[in-house]
Every structure is written in structure tokens, then in C-alpha cells.
Amino acid sequence: MVFFYPSGIGVKAKIAVNGYGTIGKRVTDAINSQPDMEVVGATKTRPTFEAKLANLRGVPLYAAAKEFVSRFEDAGLEIQGTLDDLLPQADLIIDCTPKTAGYKETYQKAGVKAIWQGGEKHDLTGVSFNSMANYNDCYGAQFVRVVSCNTTGLLRTLYPLYTEYGIDNVLAVMIRRSADPWDTQRGPINAIEPVLKVPSHHGPDVQSVVPDINIQTTAVKVPTTIMHMHSVVAELNKKVSSDDVIDLWKATPRIIFVWGSDGIRSTAQIMEYAKDLCRERGDLFEIAVWEDGVHVVGKKLYYYQAIHQESDVIPENVDCIRAMLELEEDKLKSMEMTDKYMGVC
Ligand code: NAD
Image 1 (spheres, rainbow, N blue to C red):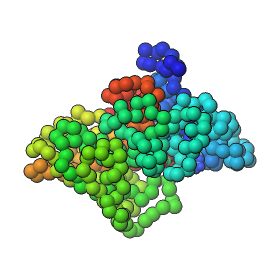
Image 2 (image 1 turned 180 degrees about the horizontal axis):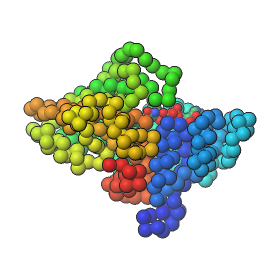
Image 3 (image 1 turned 90 degrees about the vertical axis):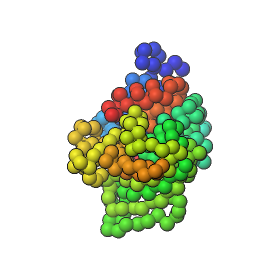
Image 4 (image 1 turned 135 degrees about the vertical axis):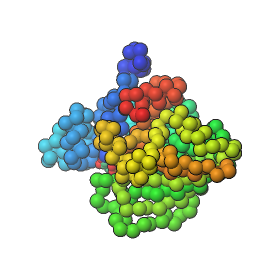
């Protein structure tokens, strides 16, 4: 297969999306914004408002399995078939179903490459992805997992520190949103809940991409639906100033700076800022670091960063497609193309 390149030769890579939910609908839009790939169909289990909007947006809609077809028929919502009809059309499928939905065997049988999301365990694929840290490890791979929103956030800022200065150790506290904004089922809504398993899974998850980063994490759930926050303390191998670190991150894709002195004192103002950027859905694909919260004491670096959980992994999914389908060898070129067409800063 000759895929489309920016020169215009060949065809676009054909991508299917299994699970058109929070991540699935964003991945679909991001893929369709790119010049070298397109979504050939997305699945749903139910004819929800998201399924209806998919139809309105011209995304070919499929039932995730035969037993769900009647739900769409009863609702009078047009579908193009089932996942079994969609898979043969795709070069790669992005699985955005809730964790452990269990489609690996189906994809294997169909002989289609697949990407899973961070809710899955590393063992499912044996390869976990972050664009900056290990694009090349996933080049041509059959099955890959894009790490979670928190792990993506940690890797975005830690990986450049690791390559530029070396890291002795990292302690990071994940202050986690309880539920996504649409989700009325999960809590807590009036409590702060520590994750008693220590270290939390986020540290080992960072190591599933860069095994040499010595990191321990803890996590606390707080009653908000807006973003995660990380409080990070990284002991570097070199003495550097906070300006050195800020300059390094300014030269790194997908990190933006915010300032308390500008009135951005919390995640609420960051999300307002994202809406003012006029992005679709008010998404913030970049990791937001408080510039006036970056401090160095000796070799210890302290900083705070905020993660828009619904959207930071989306550019990584696009790059992961390029790596797995061998559309672009150079990670920086892929990231540049992804960011250009998604409007990432
Ligand atoms: P979601 O619940 O918003 O969407 C899941 C979609 O899958 C829904 O459209 C649902 O109808 C569909 N679905 C459910 N069961 C299915 C099945 N058996 N077959 C096919 N489709 C099915 O979930 P989400 O938040 O998009 O999460 C998807 C994955 O992304 C998970 O691994 C999650 O951990 C990961 N992730 C989520 C976030 C986040 O903050 N929401 C961030 C990063 C990664």
C-alpha cells in the first residue's frame, strides 16, 4: 500500500475507531483533520446523542456487534453495518472502548493493526507509546498502547529533563479529577479520596515507556471534573536554574506556560483560557505548566502542571498511527504535522 504523503502521492491511511466516546470522538476529529489519514467508520453500542452527532458530522457509524443492531434500528438511526464489516476496510483500528472490553482476538483474526488507550495494561501490547520518548520503538508495530492522560503529561515534561540533564529521582503527586464532565455516575462529590495503593500506577506506567526514569507517584481523587494537576519534585543530575528548565520546555512541543500573575490561579482559569483559544470542545491538547510555579533548590526542581484529561492524548494517537503504519520516520516531523493540522500550540 502506498500511503499519502505531504507531496500528495498515494492514498490516505484508513482508520477505524471502536468506541465513539470521550476519546473516540476526539481522535476521529483529529484524524480527519490530517492530510494523510481518514476515519472510515466508528462504532457505538447504543444510539446515544454521540451516535446521532457522528451521523450528522458524516462519520460512518457502525454497531459494535450484531446484538446491538436492533437498538439502532429501533431508534431509526442509520448504521453502515457492524464492526465485522468495518474491520476489513481499515489499515488500523483505534480502540477507545472502556478498559478490558477485550477486542484483541477480534483484531488479530482480522489481521488489522490496533492502538489501545491508557486504561489498558502495558502487557496487552508489550509496547506503550509517547511521541517524544519512544516513537521509533513503535515504528511498524502491530499492537501499541498509548499511555494514559496522566502518564502522557508526566512524560511530556520529564522526558526532556531526562535527556538534557539526567534525573536521579522523581516524586509526583497526581491530584486527579473524579469523573469526566459528562459523567454523573462517579464521585466523590464532597470528599478527597487518597489512592491507598502506593506507589500509584502512574510511576510504573512512565517506566513502561522510559524504564530508566526513577519515579514514584501517589494519587488523590478530588471532587472536580476539570483537569488533573501534578505536583512534581524532580532531583536532577545537574545543577540548573529555573530559567534553564523553562527554556528547555519552551523548546519542547506540546507544553504551554500559564502564569498566576495573569489571573490563572487554578485549573478553572486554564479551561476558560482553552475555551478562549476557540478550540473545538474547549480542549487543551498541551500540558499547562505554571511558569511562576517552577522553582529550583539545589538540584531539586519543583513544578505544577495541569492535564486536560479528555484531550492531551489525542495528538499522541495521531503520531502513533504514523509510526505504526510507517507514514513518517521522523518523530518531530510527525509531531509537527499533527500539531499544525490540529492547531496545537
Ligand atoms: P467513554 O466511556 O467516554 O467512551 C467509551 C465508548 O466505548 C462509548 O462510546 C461506549 O458506548 C463504547 N463502548 C462501550 N462498550 C463497548 C464495547 N463492548 N464495544 C465497543 N464500544 C463500546 O470512555 P473514554 O473516556 O473515551 O475511555 C476510553 C479509553 O480511553 C479507556 O481506556 C480510558 O481509560 C482511556 N482514557 C480516557 C481518558 C479520559 O479522561 N476520559 C483519558 C485518557 C485515556
